[in-house]
Length: 292
Image (cartoon, rainbow, N blue to C red; front, side):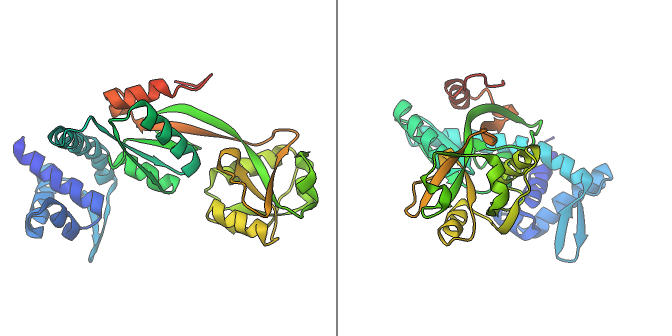
């Protein structure tokens, strides 16, 4: 069984890094040994784990299934080593948080700093796809995401729901109003996030439900870029209320019908849900009427 453990570790390193060379560097062993051990797995069990195309490789369907298992297997080994290292450094623990929204993640981080002053916190921000990949790879412990689909490997809990607001330039006709109707969007040029953005998806779904057609002047890949486009008069934008900073030259406007809401979920790998620090975080962050 020990022999297979070494072979599986080599497979996992190649699958994770996408390269036999990088896997050899990660494990600090020779590349021929990595290749020999992966080939040993394939020959012993008569399975193709990687499709090889010259210098490029990709996981086969069988390799993808095996990688989902080894993520948990070796991710828990890494977690055990991190725990031992924290003991050696006399730390009370560490929690790594990943998120797509800095404001909502920093709110959670600050709350944790007050509640658990001896815990070392590390917070990072990437796209939803990037954050999920880091969660699956055990590079972070928990994530806050505006999920559109729920993976069976995850344990999720509603963290917060916020309205989505319109953002306009301060000389826009709407700027002096407290609320507008969703129907009024039909008369405006709009700037939208990329199609994968959950904010964009929710705005499009809400407008469709109200029979409103969007006139998209531009699509951009960050909320900061959206606000800059608004300031330059390219169109109106949409942001979550928690993400809107009162940037000079702009105003946020609520919708009378309250048509757009975005929900943020606290997520962790299901196999790690009962880890003490993660369990405490989930219990302390239970939102009213949140699904469990």
